Length: 175
Image 1 (cartoon, rainbow, N blue to C red):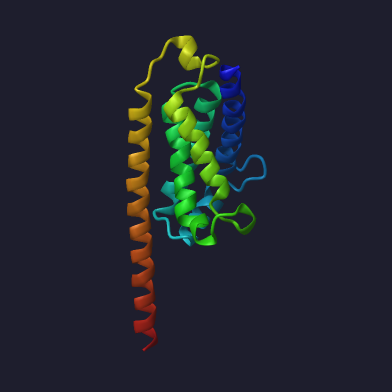
Image 2 (image 1 turned 60 degrees about the vertical axis):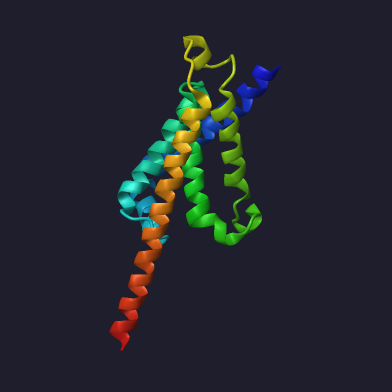
């Protein structure tokens, strides 16, 4: 039963992330593609916006495919957690906890789910198990998350710095 319990949410979460990623990449499923995603990223201070829009779309799509298949599961879980961490840092954190107000609740749940798969693995009903792939699960997942945290910190610092410099330039021009 445990392996079935690991399979069902893994496939659902993986398929949903494939959908989110392809919305960004190709405009599928009501998405707007890379140009609109890059525009949104620029608006919230993520630069270079086009580059990071592609990275986010690829992380969601590839992470979703790998998670749904149960292949390279700690990497898949790390990619999904990295995207959700970025969403929390740049979009949801300032809005509090609850999803109804646009808060961190939903991305945090997805990070928790990714932690389950990143640390415990995908279970018996997975390509990892079928192919006999043994990953250094906690270490690999932790490494992906550490890189994600560092990249997010750098992006946030640079975006706040640009915003501050931009305000100073505007104030100087107004004088």
